[in-house]
Amino acid sequence: MKKLFALLLSVTMLFALAACGEDNGGGASSGRTPADITESGVLKVGVKTDVPGFGLLNTADNTYSGIEIDLANKIAAELGVDKVEFTPVTAATRGQLLDSGDIDMVAATFTISEERKQSWNFTTPYYTDAVSLLVKKDSGIENIADLADKIIGVSTGSTSMKALTEAAAEENVTLTDANFSELATYPEIKAALDAGRVDAFCVDGSILAGYVDDTNHILESVRFSPQEYGIATKKDNTEWAEYLDNLITGWLEDGTMAQIIADNGVVASFEE
Ligand code: GLU
Image (cartoon, rainbow, N blue to C red):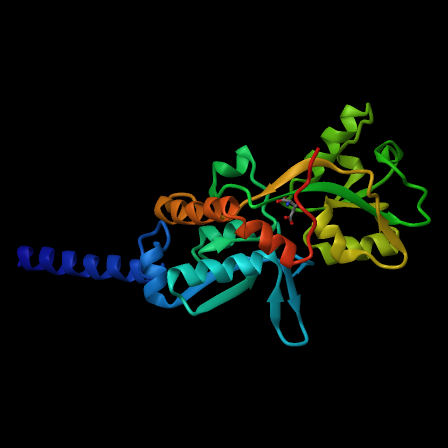
């Protein structure tokens, strides 16, 4: 009787394990391998919806365009996959969506940093941007020194607050937590700028470009803290990370990457 019970228990556990695997799209908990993705016929990619030239959603026909969309489509072609499923992400959500296995990769202005490399794998950078500031034209703000008594809007989970604090310190300007307002999304920061709740909007120039209008401008001469964008994947999925890195390095070497950047009307990478 005991033996039968033990047998039943192990069979149940085997089924439970198999079901866990299925929840992750057929792979182990570390995420899907290139072969898993090819077999499934769908590549799941986290992208931005509001970054012109990188990841922009055209709400009229629900289509995406930009460098990161072209990269995702090219990767799908390499895998022999017909369908790319795009999921909108923000700086605050993209890491969690990778960890949960909802998406296979993030191509969303995701800056590579030593700290982030502890949590996710990143490919070799495909583009380098710089952090900048968007201010109202009548604000009188021209440079970092003008920010000492101001409130700056930054997004949750982004590199912006640290980058600006360090750039200010180099100019002997001290910015503290009281100088920052952290909001979850860029539309919220833009609304805060328009309402006068923040005096400046700080993030990568590529992202600010999506929020320029007649009343504001980007401080073109204020560009600091190079932001190297890499495609991010789940930390323990080394096979997938290596597959993607090989593609990106190949495309950087053979000029494909430069062509994708030019095709999207984006200026070449940031140079200090
Ligand atoms: N690229 C910066 C970062 O990764 C800005 C935030 C964003 O990408 O939305 O933190």
